[in-house]
Length: 195
Ligand SMILES: C[S@@+](CC[C@H](N)C(=O)[O-])C[C@H]1O[C@@H](n2cnc3c(N)ncnc32)[C@H](O)[C@@H]1O
Image (cartoon, rainbow, N blue to C red; front, side):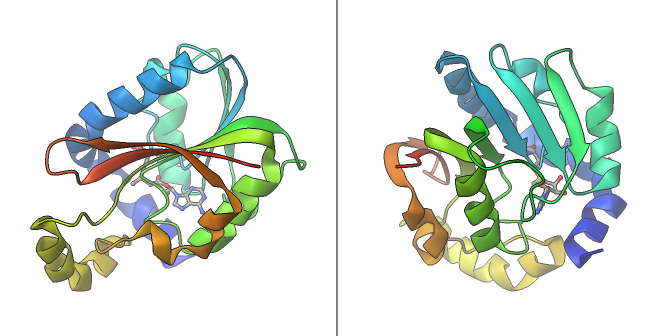
């Protein structure tokens, strides 16, 4: 078991506190996902699934690497959602299976984001969409906070100083839309297509 999985297994009970802070952006993100044409959607790293009620469209498959987070997610499971314990970096799905892959606050905590994106690319159908919600270090005063926090952020198994351009795997996709969220432009919604 990776140190990261162990961390989420041990601290899953604290996640609802973190989640309070993430709720407003997730509402906007999932509302946008509901507007997309009906499709087969994979969400990687569903966490405790507190956002499942926001899904109003699509056939949803969720995976989660941490058993504790998955147990919490199962309590929030709804009729249109299938859940599995699985590593997003080693997906057990056929190539070209999904119309959408969702990464909500996962890309900066994954052990190997390059492997994760390679798997997202593999399981997406041609012209399928990769939908990302995450913090990215902005070009404003918050970059100094990210730099200061970066040393300690390892203890929380995330990268506080985080630039998308540093992940080469993203170049397999074509950026279709970027929404910079207020306040402070710290969070972004990114929509990529698999060419
Ligand atoms: C910050 S939480 C985000 C949870 C949820 N997506 C949300 O937006 O609230 C990150 C989650 O991703 C999971 N995770 C990290 N790496 C993963 C991987 N390689 N495969 C599947 N899940 C992963 C963690 O266990 C954790 O539950």
